[in-house]
Length: 547
Figure: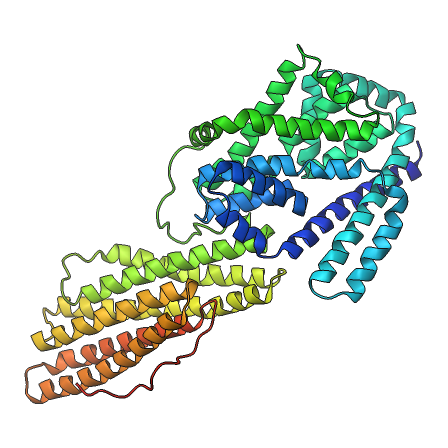
C-alpha cells in the first residue's frame, strides 16, 4: 500500500460522488417542473404514489432528492402525510437502479462517454445541454469507479484490514458500519457503489457486505431528517417514516436470514460480485415495500407518536413552510414560497378586515393580534424576498423565472396594503379615544367602499395563482369603479362639511381613509397583473359613470 494507492482511491471516490451529484442535478434540470406536477397530481392512490416515486427516483437517480421533495411538499402543506408514504416507498425502490447500472462495468468506455457528454454540453442548447451534462457525469462516475477498483486491490493484502473485515462477520457490527458510512457519504447509492467495488476487489465477501448494505440504507435516512429541521411537524414525520421503513426492513432481513437461506438465494442470482450486491439491494428494497405497504397508514400513525403535538398557528416572525428541503431543490422552494405568499395574503386580508371593521364596531377589535400579524407581515416581506433572491440563482424555466420575478412585486404590494390597514386602524383608535365618529351618511358610503375593496383584494389573490382573462377584466373594472366611488365620496364629504353635518376634525381622517382604500385597490390590481399568466384588459372601453 503506497501513497499513490491512497491518493488514487480518494480521487476516484471524489470523481464518483461528483459524477453522481452532477448526473442527478442534470436529470432534475431535464425533468424541470414536471416532477412537481407529477407529484402533486398522481399521488392520491398509494399504489400510484409508489410507482411514481420509484419512476421519478430512477429518473433523477437520487432518493435523497425525492424524499427531500416529499418533505418539502408536506412542509408547504401541498401533500398530506399519508400520501407521502407511497412516494417514500417508491423512492426506496427507485434508488436501487444506480447499483444495477454500476454492475454493467463500463469503466473501459467511461472516457469516451465523458468526452461525448462534454461535446454535447458545449455545442448543445437548453435541454440538450442537460443531456450532455448527464452523459458526461455518467462517464466521470465510471472513471471514478475504475480508479477506486484499482486502488482497492492492495487493501486485501494488509493484515489490519483483513482483521477489520473479519469483524464484519458480526451482522450487528456490519449494519452499524453501513449506517456510519452512509451518514458520512450522504448517499445510499454512492455508498452501495463503493461497496460493489470492494466486492469486485475481493476485500469483502457477500455475507458481511449484505449487512453493511442494509446499514447503508438506514444511513440514507439522515438526508430527509436534515431536510426536515426547522420544518413543520408533518415534515419531521416524513423523515421519521423513512427511518422506520429502513429500520423495520433491516430487522426483517436480519432475523429471517438466521433461519432461511436468503443470502444463498440472492448470491445465486449472479456470478458477478457487483451484480450480487446490486440484486441484494433491489430485493431488500422491494421486499421491504411489499411487507410494509399494507401498513402504510400505521407508519403514518407511528410517526405521529414519534413526533407528537401540533404546529403553532401564525407564529410570529418565523416561516411556516420554507425550510432546509427547499434550498436544495428549486421546485420545492418555489412551492414553499407560494405557500408563504398565500399565508401573507391571509394575514393582510385579516388585518384589513379588522382595521376597517373598527370604524363600525371597535368592541371586537383585538389590537394585540393585529400588531402581531403586522409584525409577521413585515418579517415575511423580508424573508420571502431573501428566499426569492436564492431561488433566482437556481436553474429555472423561463416561466418559473418570470413567476419569481413577479413575486418580488407581489410581496411588496401586500406589505403596503398591510401598512394602509395599519394607518386606518390608527384613525379608528384615535376616533375612539376622542369619542367621535363619522356621520351616518359617511359610514354608509364608507361601508360600501370597504366591501368593494375587500372584494377586489380577494379576487386579485385568487387570480394570482389561478389566472384567467375574465377574472382579470373583472378586477380591472372593480379598480376603476373604486376610483370613481372615492371621487364621489370626496365630493359628498365636501357637501356635508358645507352643510355642517360633518365635523371638520373628522374630515382629515375620513379623506385619509378614502385614500388608503383607493391605494389598496391599486395594489390589488398590481397583484392581479403579477399572475403566472399576464393579462391586459380587453373588455369594453370604460366610461365614467356619475352617481
